[in-house]
Length: 311
Image 1 (cartoon, rainbow, N blue to C red):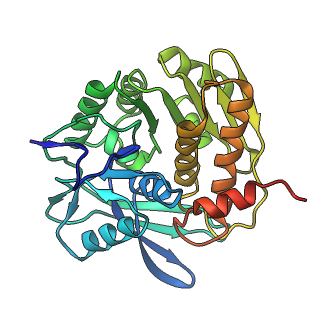
Image 2: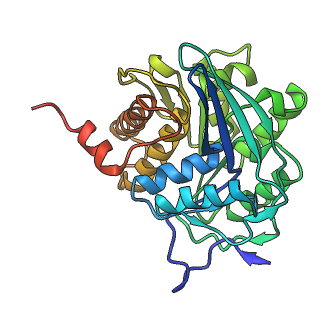
């Protein structure tokens, strides 16, 4: 059984460990077809690496050309692919078909299982989400990681709902709520929120997540901005206006920048000023990402430059 992350000369200390799927996005548009390394958790890990955060990814890929492309992509951002990640016979893929407005519809070829891994829980943040938290048998291993690390680090979760890969609504909602109880920060898109809780408005959904045990609930609303809620405060942060090439990876860039904010927020907890800074930073990261094709998140320098007030 491997350690999830044991610091040492060969494996430096990681601020964030991400657990979840990595795959190849096959993007089809009127201009043709392009392949990108992707998968929501892998995108979050890559986004964190681009932001200068020491990050490792535990995933399941195949020892094939697509798997090698994913590892090369992650390494280009300084992300460590953790031991046990080469465990599938074939690397998964997702075909994204782009609409004229840049939005994407997905079709998946994926299986998800994890090697037995004992989490050392040395990171400051453990992040998971998406297909990895719903698809058996790997989802059970992900839940076990969260249970074992629950009191050792901050746990963040983005379910990134893909209805085509889920069972019944009731089953998926139950899986989601079981995991929320193990997490500190939960981020949903408005589409996720409406799918999970079609009878609730976004404010009620955020309150429901807090009632399940989350300390911070975040709901993104695209061009309408994002809602950040704690037991003490609820704040709406406007989006950053941006020309849209496509929306691939925008939510993952938001999540990566949100985690960066959690790591750097200081000692003020979730005071309203902290929530505003978290939302503003994450919204800027998403805006930069949608300006260019594919899951191409900002570097720390790009993000900091765009966040500076105009002279």
